[in-house]
Image 1 (cartoon, rainbow, N blue to C red):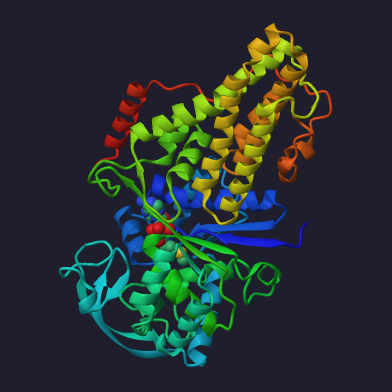
Image 2 (cartoon, rainbow, N blue to C red):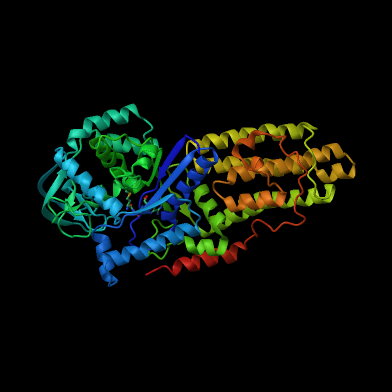
Length: 529
Ligand code: MSP
């Protein structure tokens, strides 16, 4: 096992209902990055899980006539099933109701209290139940919750507070010394300039209005605020403060923590301060991605515009769904889902560009060389040389983008390489070379086509492993070294007799755009309430 480690986390999800496609994005993104890092030789670890405490969960369970524990147990089964269908390669699934977590939350709370960071006081403020967040008068927007726009109500209670003020200067210094701690930069600046620099309020870290949570050991009518409880999952899952903290020693601090833009405030302010208070190193990077939107705004059941991943998976397959998500989201920006957009990506990128390249290549290697891939004989003309140079340039860029987590740009580079390979067929016109019996040149073209498809299979592998495997198996490429990432820059590796399949199944079957957009639209309508 490599000594280079990579620890990546997703937020832990509220199991308050089914997961929609937007929620699935974080996890697909995290999974793809983890696979890429593993491919590059890192000992990578991915954590996901469920955030099972809080008033909202208690209420949902009650409505369904279940105890909160029964309810979250069912939801945990559901979550694990859906992640399995999406082939999410997580290494650990933490649930905040597990004793490995709750025991440590109790312990952490005690410590913070003992060292004077948490103190008892009284809270009066405006509370938003769905968001489980208190707001001050000035934070409200038109008297409503600034995050979700719903009604808030006034609440006063005895509560414990975390002394955020004490850590503000340290946090400012950390932000200044680590300009890339939060990405994208716009979010970092927003947090830094609008929230941190003006000064932080102490944070209310307990509740008494409900009891579905971790009880404060020394004062059990208080339950720990769901965000303090939830945030520490990233370290309790590694065994922090437990009898066995091997994983913690090995993997903490995390290299990358992924969150949606709505929860960057919790991760960019409270989380680093909790870590400072515990005297622990801060993660290397927290990255806030945008939201998956619909043409008419946010996804919501009342609008009847929710897309559930299952619908796309069942009809179009996993890889097309993963590809869509990864390709549509520009770094840190929102992405828009539309049935037309989905079908276009499927037909243009997957069927035309990638699928046809494979089909044409296999057809020609069979026709001209009885299925045996000719040996590498260097570049026989300008077109070969240009193809090699440009492809290597795209691969380099692909790698830079993957390393900086710009996955949509990375896939774009992979598709540029695919697209110039398609053009290369048109330019070199292998059918003319065959007719004119220019065997040397024809061999070179066939070799380059197979080789570029191998490179494409490697580039898309972290995002779409099944498709990558299909390409390689149709090309007859089985040798492990030819599937390793390190082999991607080499052009002369296909030495053994490689035999392509006689007739391969199409990777993706072209969709009828009218029928499928209608289908997706109807399925979305069914989600309305
Ligand atoms: N439980 C908290 C996280 C605690 S982490 C210590 C939570 N859960 S959530 O289920 O509401 O959201 C999970 C993730 O899904 C968040 O990163 C959130 O930003 C993301 N998304 C929710 N809706 C989304 C879209 N429409 N699009 C993209 N991501 C979305 O927050």
